[in-house]
Image 1 (tube, rainbow, N blue to C red):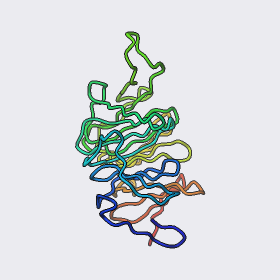
Image 2 (image 1 turned 120 degrees about the vertical axis):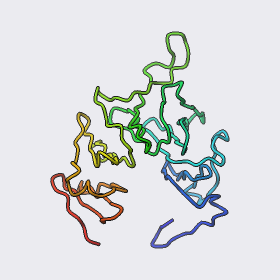
Image 3 (image 1 turned 60 degrees about the horizontal axis):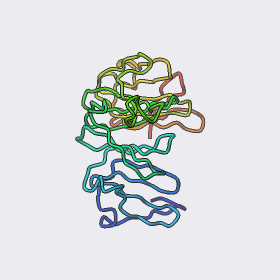
Length: 238
């Protein structure tokens, strides 16, 4: 942890795992998704402890953590076909399987759009699946309504590709990185493709960030960093 120009190092024994795959800031807590479960760091008290809601994830390899606008925490596990939603205020876990419409494997990224659709991506050529919260708590036969999953959003098909990264910017646009399709941008109505012959799509994108001037910074694995001002990409030499 870096604070007040100083680093604090946590021992492996305290972390329980040496590999962290995902970080989530929730209120005054920092959640860490590791290869052996979930760890929660209480920021105010500087307390680091294992966090395993209902003993679901002990020894599980957590691939992604995400908190949506309803304060629910979504949890994806590597090499699983399920996804989990933790109701934080009620401390209740919900499991979504193929019986609920979640026909997906190895989810690696989760993001919410401005219409409260939850996006799930995978690196297994299964594309994107979208979750819609239910409008009523119960179905007509009085069963609990868990919501619906679909492979389309606004009747638009996204490519069935190998996705590696998603990012939502300040304008609620969603950036996506895929192996075959390259860098894409969803503006809420349509997909913009940055063609493969474009300079940025020649390189594997590893991270995206928007600064206070609304420039988009794109980190690549082999060719440094690019800055996008909404019109042009510029390679930044380090």
